[in-house]
Structures are given as C-alpha cells and as structure tokens.
Length: 173
Image: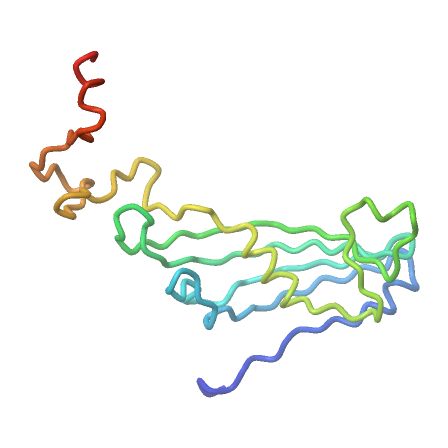
C-alpha cells in the first residue's frame, strides 16, 4: 500500500450473531490511526493492535476488545517528547433495536446489523486517553520566567513573585 491509499474500514456483519445464541468468534487486526491529530501532533506512530471477541446471547451481541497502542506526544508541562504504551479493554453490548426497558442502559444500536468497528474503537480510544499527558507524574514543567526545564535543575530565577495587589497578605505569612 502506498502512502496515499487509505486503509479499508472494518465493517462487521452481525446478522448471523443476532440470529444465533451462543455463536462466538475471535479475530485480531490493526487499526491505523496515523492520520489522527491531537493538539497539533500525530501521536499514533504505529497501528493500534486489537484482539476482539463477538459473542451472541439473547438477540444481542457482546463485543469485547483488547487494544494495545503507543502514544508519542510532548509532555503537557515540560514539552519533552515521550512515548507511553496503553492497553485498555473495551466491552459493548450491541443490539438491533431498543425496547422501552432498555433505553436506560449502555447499548450500541446497530439497526442494519453492520458495525463500523474502526469507528467504535477509535471513539473508545479517544475517550480513554489521559486528559493530561505527562512525562512522569511529578513533572515540574518549565520556569514561567526563563523557560528552563525544571526537571533538569533549578534556573535561578526568583520563584516567588507576589502580585502587588496581594503584597499586604504576604506580611501575614
């Protein structure tokens, strides 16, 4: 495949699963998210590896998916590029229609019996990403005055600049 071709979207026909209880099938594939941009960066340098299982029960289908991917992004505090590996698991109950009792549950409606697995897993992965991407939990970030990476050492800037409007309160400390 050349760089200009787009990878095929994985569409799963679930009709046979909706019609047969106990039917189960496992499969693995790779999801290409290399074109996705987050915060001005394309963090998915390698495909997302997925291992999924479909299990039919009671007119619905249970989808269980294990994923593994590496994000390469700048730290939100110090801007050093860092790679971290994530291995989340996702589970969804797929139905063709909802009854009035099921409207309050967590169901994925698949009325035509065709599931866009790429779209569903992409959404799961995006919702599972950390709000803050840090190089380490105790990252000190950058000095707001000179821009020195404080993880590498102190910069010597005066760290305690008090807002002149609050200077009176400083005397109480």
